[in-house]
Image (cartoon, rainbow, N blue to C red; front, side):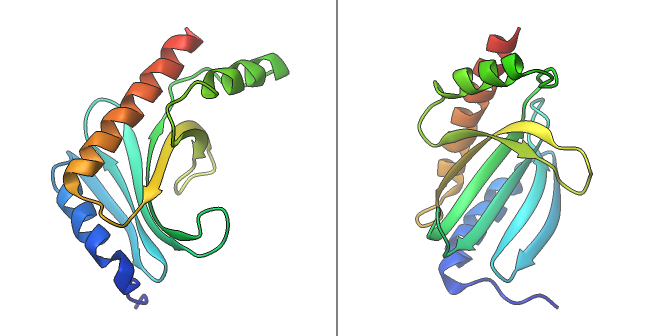
Amino acid sequence: MSDPLPESLLPALGAARAWLARCLRVDELYVGGDGGMWVFERDALGAGCLELADAPEAPCERETAALTLPLALPPVATAEDAHALLGAAAALPPGVAVTELGLATDEHTPAVTIRVPAAGLTPEALDALYARLARAKHALEDDAR
């Protein structure tokens, strides 16, 4: 049996579960200890990840919520490819970063992630974060074409 979530994450857990209930598919990977993680499919953008974490260490140093969506990009094969991706990432909205998504596989897919404080999280806030993340995803993918 896993440890219960920290009490400070319980309101965010309620918001996350309410938001996830509106998804097409949800797989709960874990809930307990220092957070929770779900893989979800909300629409045609592909399988994403929602994570709640109690991260007392730097750089977070607080309870956070993170949404991640995969990027449909060609593989980064050269230094020029990496430079182009980093250059495009510099223009992403505040809070959005290029990361990787590697859940339960050995494959690591380029992704975009947005991380925010978990305090005050609501399903509506997750809707807005998802919309911002989707815009960033489309901008990076369009730039790669």
